[in-house]
Image (cartoon, rainbow over all chains, first blue to last red; front, side, top):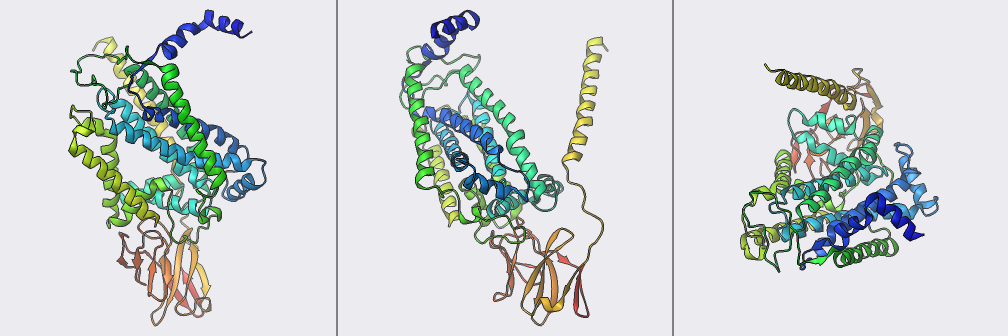
Length: 363
Length: 136
């Protein structure tokens, strides 16, 4: 039976050739490591978010008078509703962790360098959209935490003259965060962001396939130093076949991702639910010690430390712009960060600064 | 001008016009409607706010704090911190208003004392008539 289906497909779409060219005979560098699987892990994380999100949509009510109750019902009354909500909440945090690790390792291995500038820019834009997913999804349970975190973030544009107030009102749908903001963020979360994200994922994967995987700089010599005068796809004729060599690594990491997710859901189910996340939104009371999600703690703390609001937000926008455009700013030919002491020091300094800011913001 | 160039110009003009004719309604659609011009006054009894106490009220859909300052009388200020929009709270022992988000503090006139707020809290018109406080 399976042979018949295989033959049926073979004569129509050339299945054998497809499998051969893209899987069994597709070569990857010999020195490829587990860090090269983080993109796949992030992609699987995104798929988990899509599936669990669709299940949540069945019971969630995007209305300020019903949103909190509907989420509580999902958690307490709908059979296994807690499981899908936990998968969505824990999954969002893990997905952002995987995306950040992916970017950090790509940066560390110098794989953003030419000819992969566009792959890097697309990846950073996807991270931005992922964070916007996190932000827009954060408001939907309509809790004290989500309400005030959204108030703070939507106030940020007011630092800019002329258009600032208009952008804030546009985001909120009025002067304050209200039911209109909830429906706007709901539309953003489930309908506006996903197609953009999907397009970026497709172009990201297409670029990786088109340009070819970059070997890490730690083992073999890299070819990126050649003059860039014509397009040349990087192939690895002496490399390992994608299947089973890299595929097994990817599978192992995806299983690890799932294990971490279910370990958190099972053993620390309240890990991502501080007290304010269980209290319905109150537009008349800002809770004490309000903090955003961990991935916004560093910019949040920076806003505390820089006394001028315009300056604080401008500094962050400049840092994001530098991050996105880094491949165009770093023109050094050397890919190996161990041979670049200045860049290595800056990289470590930024990482430590971010960790300190996060820890400080959490206190 | 060659026919091909003319068609290119025409296509650009029509394309831009089509985009603008769609973009304008889209911006108008997404932009929130303007606030109601009607000024709805809020009236509170004086006895509801003893000296050294405050009360939050909603005035024209905006959060306002009315404070009975010991020895100085009533004042109404916007409750929304000018930094990032959290709600300030009156702290009697410090004789100040403080924001729980980024620790900005204001005096009881709404002026910034410390922290990152860029502007004072806007004052809201208030008058006392007999036993009533009228906001607006």
